[in-house]
Image (cartoon, rainbow over all chains, first blue to last red; front, top):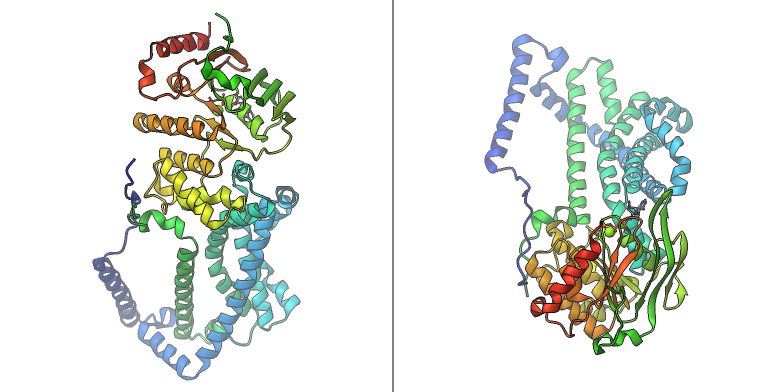
Length: 274
Length: 265
Ligand SMILES: Nc1ncnc2c1ncn2[C@@H]1O[C@H](COP(=O)(O)OP(=O)(O)OP(=O)(O)O)[C@@H](O)[C@H]1O
Ligand SMILES: [Mg+2]
């Protein structure tokens, strides 16, 4: 057969048109404007604040240098917790997923932990780790751990055992099975788990700060609420939203590099038919 | 008609060869299900054996036992005289199911067994190139499995097996998803490979013409529990041209004979 070109995927990824981007920008401006107008026309500042007040509050927060301090603290808590939780969750999920005997043994415990609303453990973590950064790190790590662990474990267990058998037939030793079959296979699931788990790192840090803290973005939000400073609350929320968006962007970049094959259908154009 | 004709013609020189695979009263059971056997059958070294039979009669089961991924409930399967008790690394097994790794390109998939066997890089690259050309996938080296059609994936599996040059090829309906043209081309390639390597082939198919074109002998299995109910020697001259052979008057007679043998009365 003559060498042809690689068929591009049947469903090319829909890319946002420039026109769409303008539309989205327009919608955002409209929403902000509506927010401002409603706040002024109906005097709802107390409950909804207003974009101008929030912007002013953000400016004050940044100028005082406190924003940098809070941001650094919260990001450190979430970041360290995220790394610990992802590594531990990915590793243990991977091991229990592939070692079926061990996985079967732990399955009932895993399931009972799965159903537990893990946020309820926050007070316990104060008891264990105090009210410093360690507490938030461990709490964030715990939340991320479970997301990454369950996703990796369940995804890995779906593997077709015949795939491993077939690799053995092709001459794979134990080590080959781990490095060339098991790890690449589970990588997809670990990444999925990490993506699902990422927001939980921030949730963990914020909830930890709500429960007991002396600084941090979550602490500022709680503090502002107790002073009925709605603008500061919204300022805190906006900072959180920005953090999540940046993190998600970073993760997407990383994933598209590590798992190039998943989007191959859309990206690889014609091969060189030599 | 006699089940096994006397082997007198020169093209059956293979009958002098030692036995490569020996099924000795082999029975396969899955729980209470008596799936296959008892089967007694030997395959000579360098022989091209085709196996036909109704779906579910145990053809794949037969191959699994040679590969060592399944143990017989009764009887013994011997490979070069020794009972198969573990995975048999001498076989190249092209399974019915596709085992391409989705995260590897065509090239890397074909290279997989060579990596397992610690073949030096340059030599591996050479073999991969040749194997990919043989199955007509030139130009698709860098494609990922999800970009390929079913027939192309099947050919990746074939190329992967060719690359490590096994002593025995077990092929389970390898050309089922190919179009007629490509299938004919693959028949030619396969016969060339068989001639060049002197490897042993056990080839499962539902296509009688294909079996006759390729094989020295065709085993006809009965319905489940499958056992060989007929073995037909294909005494067509070699080397065979995969197109011309079809107009050989004996070809049609073999088709008739196999049809009759398959028929469940
Ligand atoms: N792992 C298994 N567990 C239980 N039953 C099985 C298993 N593998 C095969 N069987 C049964 O054994 C019988 C023979 O299966 P086998 O796959 O060998 O058939 P086959 O001749 O290859 O059929 P086909 O032509 O459809 O591929 C079938 O009835 C099947 O249901
Ligand atoms: Mg089968």
